[in-house]
Length: 172
Image (tube, rainbow, N blue to C red; front, side, top):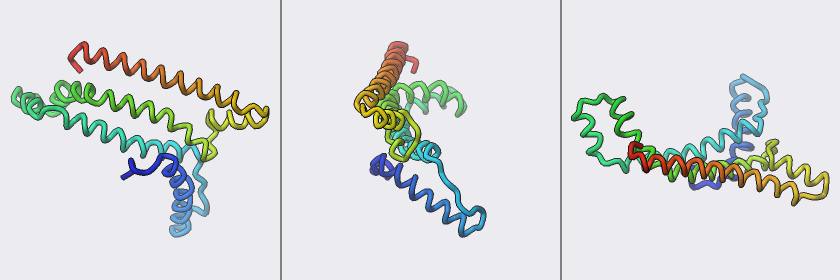
């Protein structure tokens, strides 16, 4: 269900709606009078919820891709649950999950820019402020674009190398 809600809508819902819910709970219980949720905490929670649901599906799909006979063979060899997971399931799980994990990771990195809408002091927010002060918004936003491009490119290359290594070794 969470995956069907646009990221920005969920962030704003948690920021404004979460604030109202927390303060209402405080009013009812008398534990606090007014609690302000800072944008960073809400952004981390929102991005955690959003990508937690995506990653859950990634690893669930990878787990279901492992042939059932693999686990049965490990049990037949006398492996305990921990050894079965570590030696049989986990290596295959990583190999199956890595392409989707890479996609989710790159999306997560780009989604962090949406947190600036809540007033979070991130690079996008700072670039907007600098652009307004100098009347050159394009220059600063272009720098942020380059930063995000470099971060995603480095992540993509690193995870690509890991995927290639796992395919070549045949152990994970």
